[in-house]
Image (cartoon, rainbow, N blue to C red):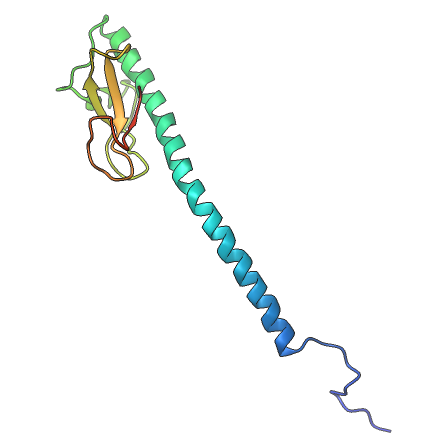
Length: 133
């Protein structure tokens, strides 16, 4: 007796079973992406805080090297850029904007370094801006 190549006794998956598995995987991937989007903004804020700490350290180093003379707003953070000055190039915040420097007598440091934040509007360190203070 000759055996058929595709008899009913052969095991396998039906199209319905395969589509069900693909559907479940799609739902799981969609929910994972949804859950990770909130973490992306948190990661950007944490990176900004790390950059601000590095910039503050370089401002302090500038003050020490210049004999206690404070960095002025007109010099800005570009005074920290160059060979042997702290940064080869000034980092940008995660939203692609430059960090801002302002002198601030009310601050214990005497200055404020901040990012304009996700809305990219300069609120002078307030609002959604991420500030060193």
